[in-house]
Image 1: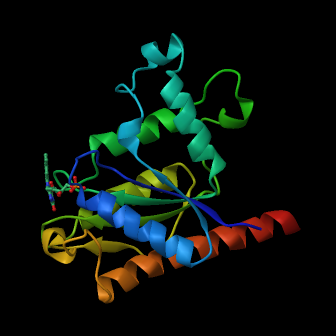
Image 2: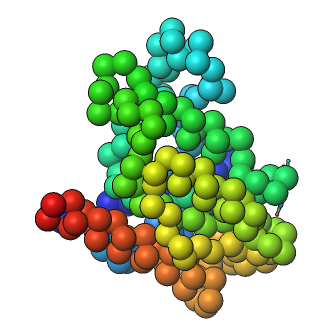
Length: 199
Ligand code: FNR
């Protein structure tokens, strides 16, 4: 069975370090034999979540995003840190995609819409903690959605010094750590798929 993974950054900033990290994670996943969807959240026209707005009809780009999130058994999120937590963009995206919508009973279990998804977490920041605190907030949010969060996480500190002129991570410990998080995420995703098939 082909291992597929959705990878995205919680930033739309043009020079986003987390986007560069997402590209590294995507390369690692492809090298490990996975089929990768590298998503750019800025390509989607998504308003701030409002239940009244949703009641008038889910915006088309939100429906596209929901389809993508539901179609992938594993996700890798590259999370920036704002004020010791994850970004409003990430929260808004997850609120929209986790909300049930009429006509899609398969997405309509509001309590556990993403039960069994496997999620790997990475972060990057110019700061010394690498955005680690964003991951400590993102983890309970994902567990609340009944996702399985890979215990191996990695926060890239001093991101502005970590990438080379081409925006790549040179060979070494940070690149290996990204590959490890991806490896563990893909492993768990495969293991769950096999267990589902067997049960
Ligand atoms: C930040 N930044 C930041 N960095 C950090 O390590 N810890 C923090 O708490 C914060 N807080 C924070 C708040 C706000 C409002 C902004 C705009 C920025 C810096 C942030 O990590 C930096 O801008 C990153 O480069 C953002 O990620 P991308 O866009 O490069 O992926």
